Image 1 (cartoon, rainbow, N blue to C red):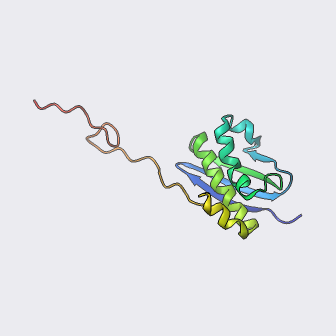
Image 2 (image 1 turned 30 degrees about the horizontal axis):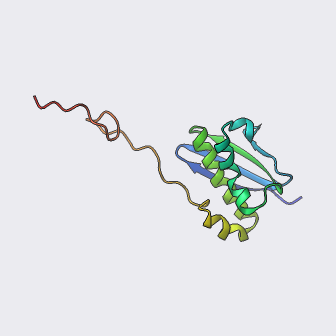
Image 3 (image 1 turned 90 degrees about the horizontal axis):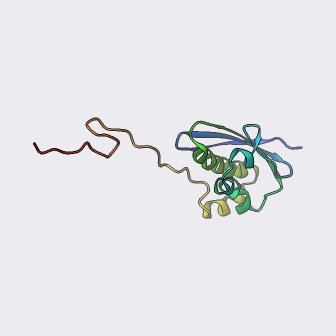
Length: 129
């Protein structure tokens, strides 16, 4: 059994630590099966995306620690983490994963609220008099 590899994925406020080792395709998030942790199918697809792209769905066991953010942020952070971990295991996956856009950290995050405004961009109602 070779040593497990790890990587980190982030998105918005979520941070996931991903540990990958040879196995039969179990994905565990915070000690739960990922299908239980991410009940929405499209979030499950996010987590599976890198594995499907590299066509290694049943070759690795993955353990994920997710913190911060919401379910969606965590799922997308896991996606980036898994993609990075796969590169650690086998650098030849790079062109495939890169073409699918799975190695890019999504830079969008919440814009700060400005003073004199209700939210980041929304202003209070303007009254001329």
